[in-house]
Length: 280
Image 1 (cartoon, helix red, strand yellow):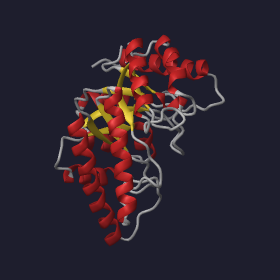
Image 2: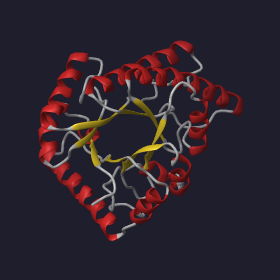
Image 3: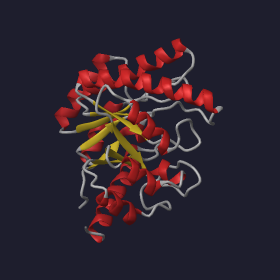
């Protein structure tokens, strides 16, 4: 068995209603989930729908450990345009409120927009300043709600795509205790897995488990890419990780729910075996 609980991100069903997949997920043996914020999956703007989803989870004995906040180029808490920045903060706070309604203990957030490239240094620093200012507002609301905010390491080609940027932002958040979420696929693509685990270790509360071949963010099940999973598990142990492993796997509307869940169960079994074959 693994050292940590293994949850499933419902992001692999992002094109299906959450009400259509909760029963099959529970029957597949998962007790913990991370809830995806895709509008087709769960309309987090609709408080009644969110409450109904939370009630159904409790009926099934499913624990929503985390909620993945929405991310898009338009949701830019770093924007130099004040109305755009304020709209992004408002959207993320709404997501945090939905997380609290669901009963999630954590909200995972991408600290930067889904935009490639790094602007000139002076402009980049201004983006960093606004990001820190915005994150303090979101973190303060999370504190009020009793939900912990977690910043996720982003893809290396995006704004704030390196761990040094994340560490700066963590240092600038003064309103609340903010943690981190390690995305193994992102770290592998950045060729920074060891560095990211080490740097985030003091704040690390959650790990998004997915694999790739070092070329694109494929969200493969662990063992189907080129990540050295025995080494990753040992590094998490060495850095005293005490949290949840969340399987964040690819999926689409065209695949049957049973097909996606078969892949998820195989991934869970793979992690169990890695931990058993490579004990402390």
